[in-house]
Amino acid sequence: MQSQNRFFDDLSKVLNGLAGTVAGVGREAEAGARERAKEWFGGMDFVSRDEFEAVKEMASKARAEADVLKKRLDALEKGAAAPARKAAAKRAAPREPAAPKVAGRKTAQPKTGG
Image 1 (cartoon, rainbow, N blue to C red):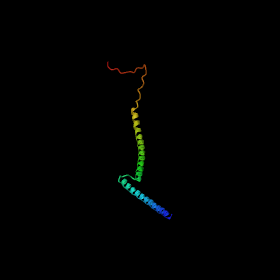
Image 2 (cartoon, rainbow, N blue to C red):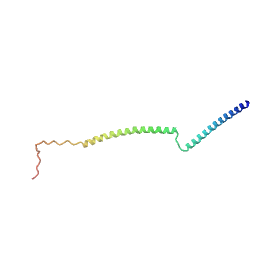
Image 3 (cartoon, one colour):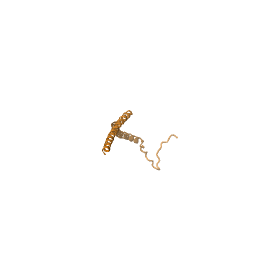
Image 4 (cartoon, one colour):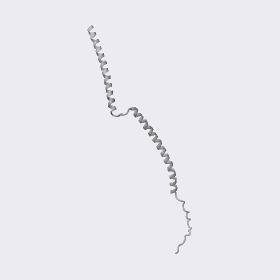
């Protein structure tokens, strides 16, 4: 019985050691793969998340500013167009109508030599 018990003790120690070694190898492989991936992605000129967020915020501010400026420009154009419309309306307004002719009444017209 002693020999069997010792065999299982040794076997469990070997398996525990093997499990620890496999876990260590797995951690080393993962770290190496991460390093290789960082180098590969770094060579592809990807932007970092921080850079992306900063540019996104700048674009959002620029868009908001452009919208404000567009509204301001529209208001200025509308204000400048109002006097021009008034002047055009005055020019296009019909002149005062001639005095209406009264039916049955003839107006004197100069006679020309004849």
